[in-house]
Length: 365
Image (tube, rainbow, N blue to C red):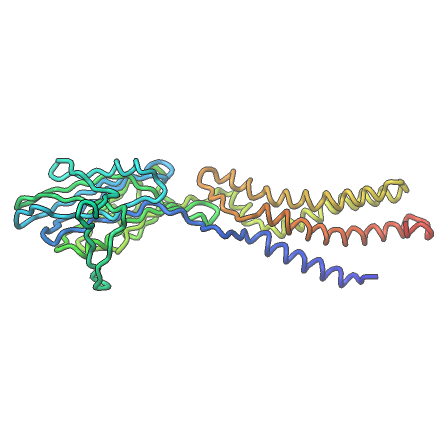
């Protein structure tokens, strides 16, 4: 006869192993979906950039943003071929998206070379010199490259394109991150000033930036920053909606505690049916025992499993829905383990009920 202490230790060990495997949400896939790689311009040393104004308009839902960037520059001589490069590219957007990358110089559109076959045209995409490593660094193949002809004096370059956020799905809600590299400004001949304006169509309470305090004193749906120096190597804007109270309560409800509660609740009901069937000496009392053993663990695991999808439904469009291979863990590992633990418990209970209600000669049946 197995002692109660040994059974108890086995149950606790089994449930701990189950909780570690089932509720860790292990996933081999990356929780991050890369967005648009955006940066300021890599400039020719032949021009001075007097100022840069970055206007970012983030649309409803934080899934897309329009960038409108203006450079005021000065050329101290006439330049026949002044190369400028934007190392901006998007991996998971179709090639048609490149057509929305618009460059204007003094109000006139300039053709942008994208996915350009430089070798067949006896040209090479220029590399840039990284002042931090003192090395020449090649541009990405999808970088936007153009050449302009400048007369001596002041000029205005305007760049417009759409960008998509990097999405971090490691939490219950998505974190949307727009990054804009300012490192190319370190390669400029000179740096004047930088103005950043940000507009969002959503609530500003979930908005964060690494730009510090805006001119208004607090971040709002329409904010503005001014710098006479480079504030960061990478300008970052992030947005992560937080769960409402009910969803937050369900998230904080430990799945192992819920599992134990449901086992006690449904297991208690199952025991009651076993007690009744044995007391009435029903011929199919054994069926009540075995059906309960098979069904109760399944119902318990399904409730715990669908708690996840209830939370996602409550979170709405911003739910990350990144929970690993939960259904595989439940089917392959979770259900057999909890079934074994529950089987031992209920067979011990059934043996006890047989001794209480059956004749000694019938206990072994």
